[in-house]
Image (cartoon, rainbow, N blue to C red; front, side):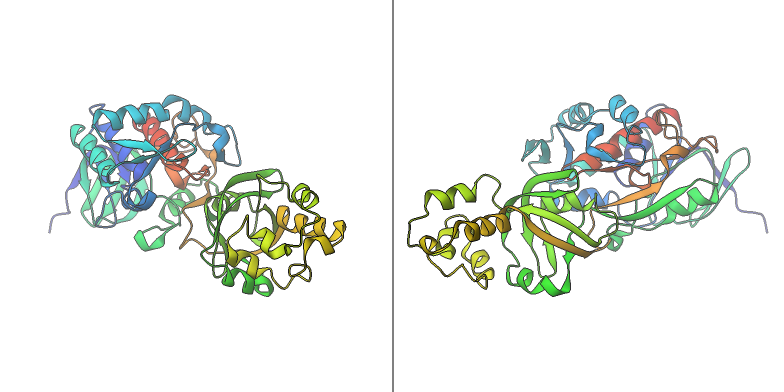
Length: 396
């Protein structure tokens, strides 16, 4: 019985998400023979589900300062060589209508499927061979990369790993990319969920459960980091944009304290002072600024049912401090199931920031979420996918 024949190509890209599609299309349009393999049945699933199905595909203000990494300078080169404006031009060339929501976040007017189709069309222009339901079982390297897959053996000069992180396992996320990095001797940093809802201490959870569903514009701080957006109370703690943002900065999600200014545009001490002689209760006064349910959840405070005029200034100022410096002790996160991205991953010290190629293994590239580069909420992680995918596609 003869041995199975090998498929020969210039580049294999493993993982047909945002970064993989961009890398494959870029390499294909350079005239290279590219095979893009995806172990699930679907292309670009994270793109499809993002932004409520409208895909927050980039951010007008994307810059290196919007990214977390052990090497804060690493993302600069790729982001400069393929910018948000380059991707916007691509979107416009396909006549995909889009709008800015808030804070520079760009969404499709229609469906995220338009972005997937655009990237598929770009791959088609580059004659990329896309193979879904194709699992890679082993990878070896001699002069070439030799891949054993469920579609047969593939030999390639270059290999691009764009397998993402551990977030949202229900759509196929896995640690495959980290395994490959370790197989070839690259250091992988400890991973953790990022852009993830947070749990609070069990002892305080009752109030949060009572407030589940309440949203409030807030200023959230942890150390030197802070974000001004909505927070959302949940049955087990907190979510919403400001919470997801700050979650990426927490080191271990265990007994860490965040501070929330629940009324960032108002000085409650000044408001209490100006209204010191009114007979309205504190609770009713606060209902001018908060949903009734929020004030009712704090109703066990001894002064909330008393008229403002009967309360000493110190006690009123303590209430103001409670609102402006609402301390919350975090005790866990909702994990990779609910995390938008994975922090940590392939150590950037192992890669060229210009090409995304391994410093140890020629023609082995790592791009997108599998790398230790994590963007803020708001289109920044997609921009990292486009930028890192583009540069790898240029140099593979």
